[in-house]
Structures are given as C-alpha cells and as structure tokens.
Image (cartoon, rainbow, N blue to C red; front, side, top):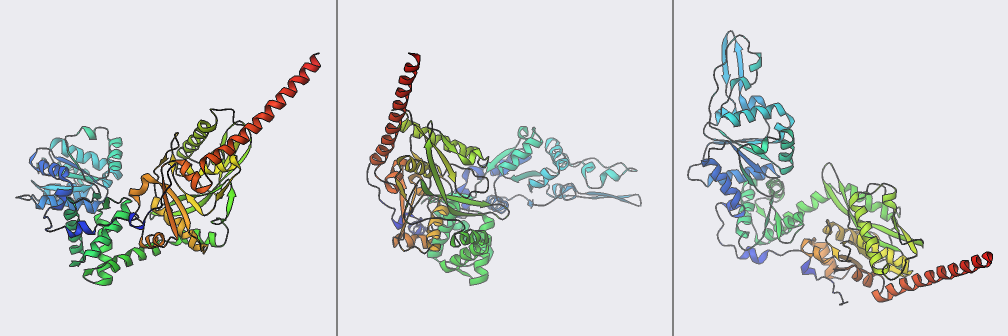
Length: 542
C-alpha cells in the first residue's frame, strides 16, 4: 500500500484571488448569466398566455432579487409587485355595504392589471381555502367579487360580475413547500404553468466570477457599501464557500449577504475589508457558541473522557456533528468508539441499535462493517469471535454512517489485541469493499479535533483521517490553516479503511495476521474439544 502524505495548508481552503483579478467589466444582468434557463423561462412566461409562474427557490430575498433583475433587463418591464404576507383582503380586495351603498376596494390581483404579482407560497399552505380561491382565478381568469373580503356578509344586494385583470401570478416557494401544496391539492401539478428554479449557490468559474462579484456588489450597494477591496472579495468568497462546504461553489443567499454587509457597514463604514468580514464571522460564532461552550467544558472537567495521548486496545476517537434546531447551529465533537470482543459466532453487536438509540442509516453502516469483516476473515474459516460496539456516553438518538471507519478500526484492534494510537481521530463511511466514502460536516469535524487538542493543552500534534473524496469540501478557517502549517494538526486523506489501520495501529498484514492467528488458535481449541467429546461418546457407547 503506498505511503500516505498529509495535506498541505493550501489545500484546506479555496483561493479565488486569481479569478477576481481577471474580472474586467461587471455584467448588468448577473442572474441571467448564473441562471440562464430560469431567466428564459420567466421571460417566456410574460409572453405566453399562462396565468401561473412557479418560481422554486429557498430564500425569499434571493427570489425577489432574481425577479427584479430579470424584469429590469426587458425592453418593457411589466407592472410588478410582490407580497410575502397576505390574506384574502390583500389578494381579492374588500366588499362593504353601508347605507345601501356598495363599496368595492380592489386587491392586489386587480391592481396589477396586465402585470405580474409575486406571492409567497406559505400563506396559501396555512389557508387552503385561500388557495382554492386563487386556483379558481387561475383556471377561469376571472376575479369574482364573491371572493372579496366581507362578500359573504352581503345579503341584500347583487354583487357585480367578475373582472378580468389579466394579472399573472408568480408563486414563490421551495421544493418542499410545492410538494406540500401538491399533497394538499393533487391537481396543482396539472395546472398550466411556467416553471423556473434558481439555487442560492453558484459554481465559481472564470465564466461566472464576474456575475458573482456583480451580485455581491449589488447587495453591498443596498447596504451602503461603496468600495470592496480585492482581498475582501476573496475573503468573502472563501466565507461563502465555507457556508456551502465546497471549494468550487459559493452560497448566494441574498438574505444572508444583506445581514453580513449591513453589519460591516454599521461597524466599519463604506469600505468592506477582510478585517470587517472576519469581525462579522467571529461575532456571529461567539453569539451562538453557548451549546459548544458547554460541550467543551465537559471535556475540560473530564466529565467526558477523551484521550488524545498514548495507546489503547479497541478504543478509537470518532468525529460527529451536533445539529441543534431552533436557530440552526452545527459544531463538531470528538467521541469514543469502543469494541469489546468475546467468544461467539462472528456477530457484531451494535449496542446503540439494541438500545433503540440509533437510526436506520447508522444500523446499515454497522451491518456493512460486519459484512466487510466477514469478507476479510470469514472466507477462510469460522470466526469464533463476536464483539460489542459502543458509542460511549451517547445519550441521544444517533444516526448517520460517518463512524463506520472508526468502528471497523476499533473492532480490528479488539480482535487483534493490538492497541490504537489515541492521538488520531477519524471519520468516514465505507462500502462492502472497504472503500472510504464521503461524509457530511467535514469542516466541523476537523475543527473539533483541533479544538479538543487545545482544550487538553496538548504539546504534540494530533492527526485526523478524513475521506479523500471530502477534499473538495474542505473550507477551513485561518486558524486551522495555520495549525496545519505549523504541524500542530496533521490531516491524512484516506481512500480505503486499511489505510486507517496502517496509521492508527500498524501495518495491515501484521494486524490481520494477529487476528488470523487468534482465530486459528481458538478454532483449534474447538476442534480439540470436539475430538475429546467424540472419544468420550465412543467410550460410553462401547
């Protein structure tokens, strides 16, 4: 097996400076460059007779920016309005009767005659009756005053006939919201409509970089920022890349950009610099770090025993990601995977699953570990071992397959009775051939092992093993890059589980031979016992 080389610091985060330097002129319609098909669909919808346009996206502000940009690029921009919060009154107007005088107050649909009205999808999901009123307009093209607010209370007077406003509706929501609407009304997908979709991310290439910079500068102008230094552009793109967890993509979420740029303008004025961006990132992290602080405190106080020195049999440092709901928060944690072997029939007992504290993905991963173990050793002769696998001090529901490599290494260590280096942490899924597969949250996991080493005030470096297929997802912060540069943190990308054994225990041949030797010894004892029993039976039969 070829010798592995640790990662170099420049592979831990993307560098967009050369692409930024090559940008000459900024385009007037960056959305059209980044999402040409969606822009064309929206443009076509204006000319086509369809009354419904569905815009699929995750962020409302991003969707509005896309619509504004697309419509402003047309030779004749149609009348346009967007509603994020609305009800029957805002859409269909109001009907009142006072002293036998009927008053008709038009709603947004009638006000946008021959124009476009963008509406957010969630209010329709909360009020299905309102959706069916909207659907009635989409099918007939007629706005009935009977749908107006207060119309049901008009008993003494005949309401006028419906209007034909020729207003097209842009229904704006995420895929999950459209799926919910389709469950509410299975006929929704059969409606005549023009569909377009945009993402809140973009791939950074020489062809797209000018459009990405243009979008950032548009949002910066709205926040009051008039100048962005070249180094600040690179720093910002690195941060947006980290939020996307991909070195070739950046997150383009208008709501988040507005939040970031407004803060930087408030604190540092009209010029955006790397220090301003770093201050925003640090402030946001510190504001949400209380749960992580409690987790770190438990390690410092040794309530959660994590060993990063010495060696131990059947004990491996795994890496996980804690995901908290409410205000979304993710951070990495180091945890112990332990294996205890005993005489048995080759079964790997997953204690998490037995205790009903694990999900289906976790259970599948443990079965794959057991399957690969059987392939390595079970083809030659019966494996007389079983083992318990435990995620120590796990008190909540566990799911995911990213601990498969750590589990296999702990298992092999226990079976071979060879110790594992405790200054190593690892993450990775695996298949039945032993190949290491990509996992999620790789940046949080790498940060977790280094943070834990700092909490324990280690003087020697710590090692972390990650799937080689996750290299493109590495978007580490400057502190981690410096740690790798000074060799306080050493990262090895691995492609096969045997590479993890090589680094954490010893040469694979030596480790596997130790397991096979123990198997032969125990199988030999069983054969000897069986032979003795046969002799005893023959004696009694005689």
